[in-house]
Length: 184
Image (cartoon, rainbow, N blue to C red; front, side, top):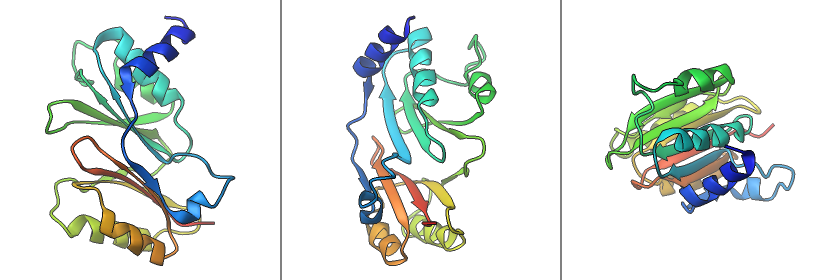
């Protein structure tokens, strides 16, 4: 597949219309346009879908996390290329899980970026408390990622009051993919 057709396929097979919000402090900084969290849904299976996953992963910025919802099991033992191995050879780490809609989700990040806290099974207000507790330990320039069971609207004003940067993307199931960072 040539790069042009992959780009066209990514545009036609991927949906990126999920709610994404970021702190006013990040919006005010024109030197930091990077999305720290991104969610893409890829429809289809087979080599073309795998190529789209790898292309999206190649575009992943430093200290960012990408969540992909795909129609195939990335842990399938019959997977010829071993998606996890290919990503690992590129310095990326993949966490895979099945969501409530029976689609597979891949959370991909650079090996040197923080692991994603999976708080999606916790009842409110535990995810918010866990994020605030973890954020309190962040040093200047450090960040964290988390998955929450719902879009964490009440958390956002609390992060603002603490002077933290943040970005949240709403997942298809109503959950949240959260990035929190302490400015330098």
